[in-house]
Length: 200
Image 1: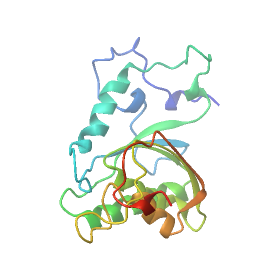
Image 2 (image 1 turned 180 degrees about the horizontal axis):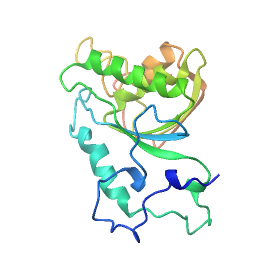
Image 3 (image 1 turned 180 degrees about the vertical axis):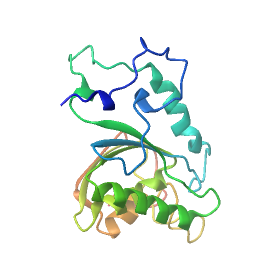
Image 4 (image 1 turned 30 degrees about the vertical axis):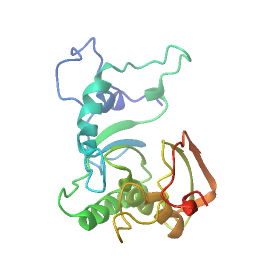
């Protein structure tokens, strides 16, 4: 299945410090490019955070850091880019001053990917963005999820009646039928809770 058009740029062709930084040095293609099976996408937004802003800079930093990746896993001998056609599909155009607009934009973007059969691999951004991603890809069929985090992100409200913040996306997703709670595994959860019902 190896397709040269979907291979990372080799450090033997262009030094890793040169060129435009993309996720894993993969080709940068528009979201509707044909042939993409796995799309790497940036979600540069942190308008739903109540603490430690700055996650909006994550996609750019990860692109730069991932220029050190190479094509073959030395432990397994697997060359993952020979198994699927991957590409950097750019960033979703998030609105830094409008939460509702951002949620709608992200949902529409992922619904389009889902309709084309592209599996998204995303880098954010704050955790609230998980909700519109799930809205875009669940489409009437609740999903399972493996979630690695320190917090469950199943709180109900923050600061009075704010239901859409970084600590609430998975509660909203369960309420909206996007996640099947019987098929959710959360790893690394620690610390105290705001309310006793967060884990229930």
